[in-house]
Image (cartoon, rainbow, N blue to C red):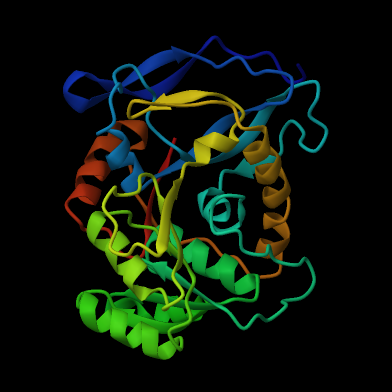
Length: 311
C-alpha cells in the first residue's frame, strides 16, 4: 500500500435498531491491491438512502453512497490514481444506461456527438439521477424524452430533453410522449423506481415493446407483456459480493470492467460541459445533521437539488 500513515478509526453514520442513525467511531477500512482509500470531504443524500433503510439486515451498516474527497492510500496494483488526488463517486446512471443487461446504449464519444435517430425515455428528469441520465443519453447522441413537474421544464430542457411532459397526469403524459416520439421509444430508465412510475415507463414504450431499467428494485407486476423490466445496482460493479433484500449478488468481473471503462470517460464529459453536477443545497451540521436531512427528504421537500453535507 502507498500513502501516509493512517489513524486507526474514522467517524461514520451507523444504522442502529429501529432504523435509528448514530455517529460512531469505526475502524478505517483495509483496502486490497486494486482499491483506493478516500478521505471523505462531502457527502450527499438521496431517495436510495431512504430505501436502503427498508432493506434488512441493516443494523450495524454504514449508511451512504454519494461522496467526494481526497485519496489518502492506493493499492499496489493501482496506476491510474494517486495519493492527494481529488475524486468523487458518480456512476449509477452510467451503469443503467450502458452496461450489458441494462439499456445497452452506445457510450458517448470523447470528441464528437454522433446524433442517433432514436429516443430514450427517462422517468424523473429533474431527480438527481434523472439529471445525469438525460445528460449522458444526450451526450451519446440520443433524443431524450422525460416527465417532470412544470416548474422543472426549463431545467430538463437545458440538460438535453427534447420532449417534456407533466408527470402529475400519467395518462396524458403517456399520450403526449408517444405523440412527441412517434411512438418509437424502445428503451426507458425509471429513476424513481416506484410501481406507478415503472408502469408509466412501460406504457410510454412504442408498439414494438422494449426494455425498462429501474434503479434499485423492479416491481414484479408488469403493465405490458412485450416489455422486459429489469433493475440495476451500482454495488455489482464494485468488485465485492454482497447480500441485499434476501438475494446474494456475487462478484461480477464484467460489471467491474465496464464500470472502469465508463468512469474513465466522465472527466472529459465534465471538462467539455456535456455533464454538469446537480444544483446543491448545503446542509450545515456534518454527519450529525444527516438524520434531519433524511427527514426533510422523506417529507418530499427536496426538488431539483441535491442535499450535501461537509464532513
